Length: 436
Image (cartoon, rainbow, N blue to C red; front, side, top):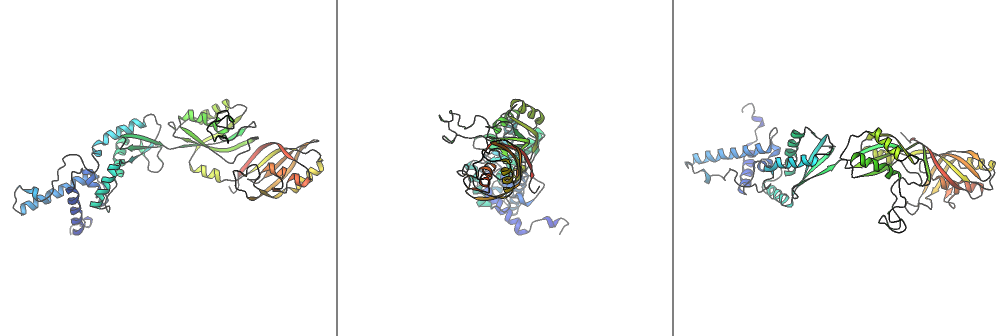
């Protein structure tokens, strides 16, 4: 054998490839791309189009040699199927003749969409899918590459050459989806994620959009035909400016927990991530965006520390457990200061809470154990006290005070033997994640 013979296929493999190629060519007109693609896994460093041409050349040479051996002179057409291409390919319906057209359509669709990386995808028509399956029945799939893969690659190379943008197979900024049936290119733009903290300075604003319970967001008399229980939310106050700045379609708000609608969020604020969907702008001045939001929301909401993060941070944020510090204003008519101080000592430690009656309609009715690390009296008057409570994530502070008709034990009301309730609640600190 010659030095390079180890790269040659065996005689049986040679015959198998050639016989498969002959069978394919007998089915009708097929382009070099579709012919070569059926043997894409057999060599590297070449294109499917080049493979197809090479296979035709080999079959032509074999046909010529067979004709000479048979003394047939120029009557070679009877020895092998016609190898020249005439007419449109029955497999791809000529799509590989339109690579430049599809690349131009994609570049036009991408115009105005800020991106550094891209990827091409393809949605085949039903006819092309059926054609490919028919071809695979003839040729098998041992060596074949899907039509989609070749089309994505070839159009992608043209786009990269013309735009100087990079192909990214894992996290492209945008996917240009070639819709062959609709003869259009549609964009799938990767979301951008912005992390930060917010403070809520007033009561009565929910964290996220709060759909009307009566009409489920459709609009009715009860909600003033707005579809919402509240006119504004933390999410909407922030999202409006993000959508405008990034020319986005929509946003999704992810918070590290949430405070009650009637509670303020003070201290350094609550961590959040806003997912920006289909942004046509990706690189924006976050400091300027932060300033614009704060100016618009002055006296209501303050955002800080805005920065770009990866999608994976959403899962981390949602899974983290943050211990919290509250300031609770409590009604305590008929309870003296010494009794209240002793009761605060009694509720420090392990608390057993059954899901509060006010939220049991939307949460599982379970008994949870949570810890109160400290409960200290900040101020006291005849019928009112301010209490500072540091507790484990997931503890319901209002029920810790009221007892919720025995669903929370021990409770402040239960220990002192009098009705007590939280009249105002502030979150003043959200501590670093547990187990950070």
